[in-house]
Structures are given as C-alpha cells and as structure tokens.
Length: 328
Image 1 (cartoon, rainbow, N blue to C red):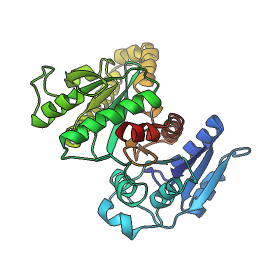
Image 2 (tube, rainbow, N blue to C red):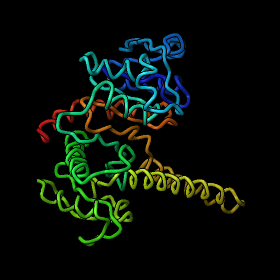
Image 3 (tube, rainbow, N blue to C red):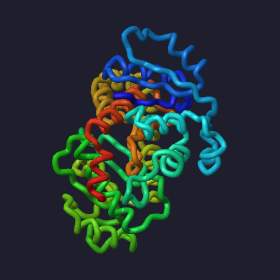
Image 4 (cartoon, rainbow, N blue to C red):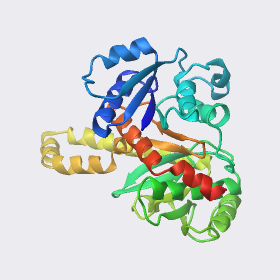
C-alpha cells in the first residue's frame, strides 16, 4: 500500500508531518510518500532513523496556507502538495491521501479539481470521529455543506454506515439524526424530512437523538447538516478544552489540591487515553472517488501516525467501493 502525506499540512510543517510518517512507516510497514518542499522535507527526514523504511519524497513547489481561500487555490497553486498528492491517488500511483492542511482547500481540490465525486454522490461529507465510551462515533457532515438538502443527509447516513462497517469494524452500526428532541416530530423541516427518508433505508436507524446521547457511547453514526455539525464539534471541543484547562488550574491552586491531583494521576491518565482524539488522528472526506483523510492543523506526530492508520484501514475496508456499490 502507498499512502501519500501532505508534508506541509500541520502548523509545525514539516516537523510533525515527517515524524508521524516515519512512525507510521515503521509501525505499519506501508510505503509513505511525502509531498512538499523537497529540500525542507528531506532535511527533516534526515533527523530520523529511516533504515529499512519505505519512504519516498516528491517535490511540490506551491504551498497552501491556512488562510488561503479554497476557490482560489484550485487553479492558482496547481503544484501544491494537495494537487500532487491527490493526483497520485487519482492516477492509481497511490492508495490514499492524508493532510492536516487547509480543510476547505482539501475539500475543494478533492471534489472539484482532482478525485471528483463518486458517481451518484450529491455532496461529499466532511466527517468527525470521536472516541465516546470506548466506541468511535462518526459525525457527518461537520462543515462541508452549511446548506444541505434532504437527499444529501440521506446519503450521509449511507456513507457513514459503510465507513463504520468497513473501516471501524462495526457489524451493525446504529445510525441516528441529531435534533432538538428525541420525539419523531422534533427538529426543523430538513431534519424531519431526512429522518423520514433515512428510516426507509436498510440501516439500523434509531431515530433522533439529542447531544447528551452522543457521549453515552451507544451510537455509531450521527447525521446532521454541515452548519449544525460544525458548530456542534467546535462547541464540544471548546467545552472539553475549557474543562480540562480549568481542572488543571484548580489542581495547582493549593498544596492539598496538588496532592489530590497526584493521587488521581492514574485515573486522569486513563481518562485522557480514552478520549484522546490523537488516537483517531483524522477523519475521512466521504463521497470523493478516493480515500482522503483530513487531520487537524494542530496535529502532532502521533496524530499524523493515527491519521495514516485511518487511511490504511479505509483502503483495506474498500470504503470507496462500498459507497460506489451502495449508490449505484
């Protein structure tokens, strides 16, 4: 398997991108193709022991910054790591593409410039995968489509179900729609109509759920429009950050609290490992004609390693073929 990594994606590019790729090449034994400023990438790669590892470097002279507008970079920066990397997948010279770069640019280049949509897909969905009580929750859409249509949400349910089965190994995924109440009549018109369509599908659809149900670890796929999804995940991540930061502050407030914190350090460590998003690393852009994994710009080396693992599993699970067959 050959997995392409955008070596200029993270905020620390190419440091975290290269280190995470080396970790993945060593642990998983696959070929990693690093695409970016060849001189800078090779200089960073030289800091690591790569003996026996299958790592290639391909130059890409253009660089896409986080502030670049997606509509502009598709044509103005044709030699970017995103263009070069996704074209390798499109041409069959690689199996998957991983990037922690500009999410909007990744979506636009994949959908409109290189890989294009899988036939039958109305709109690709940007997903988020979160560990919830030892169960990975797939949320889609989380930002690619702020204004959605009923048939798009219907397809999001199908694609999320396929990913849960093929890549995450869930035998019979529980699928739900996010709403402001669990009753069947709750939600706005879009949510209600989407629920009516989804429950007609051959899925294990359990109906509407409220946000509080997501953390119980009982749902595998939750469907929503991109506007609600993006606000939800940003609020969720901000709340977790606030709580953990404030807890750390209070533990250090006095000697007794510090002592208690030391005694509870094992419990904190177990909790952190259980909810650590770095174990997931990245999430797929579902609906494009190739495996594309999107990671956070703030990703560290271990997150990049995990994102590459997501790509490996998606290729092995034949998620693209699964979506093609489901929507044929």
